[in-house]
Amino acid sequence: MFKDKKVARIVAIAVVGVFLLGVFGLAISQSGTGYAASAGTASNIGKVNYQRLINESPELSKFKETMQGEVAQAQKDFEEKSKTMNDKEKEAYSNQLRERLSLKEQELKAPIFSQIDAAVKSVADTKGLAVVLDVNNIVYGAQDITDDVLKKLTGK
Image (tube, rainbow, N blue to C red; front, side, top):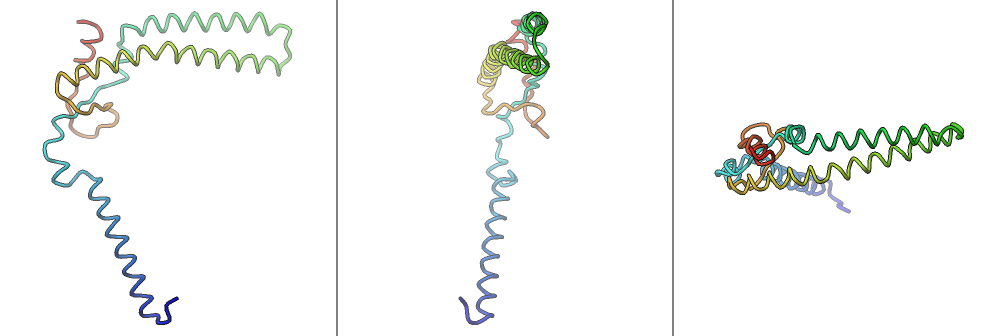
């Protein structure tokens, strides 16, 4: 394409330069170290310990009780129906029961997660927080609202 190696080299260096400037600009804009990113936005960021909210949810004991009943029923079903099955059929039926238990677990957890999310949103709105993240995703800063959300969930 270029007959002169000197022109080809200059064009290549220019392309690399533009690429590096683009990457550098993107890195600066995404790093959050610029003036706009640090202009007081940390005050409207909250954090919660989501795992603690789940573990201390008043609905968790009902969930565990229901799941224990579902597991016991699945074991009973397996013991009764697998007596006449060969190993391959037993494995397939076992997988089917595991899938059923997994779906039931998701079904039972969904209202708990929704209740927690609603409480987080309510507390965040009250405190004027625009963003709430899990504590595992925070390195530094943010207002911890876990206790306030727990109070809202438990009514205490």
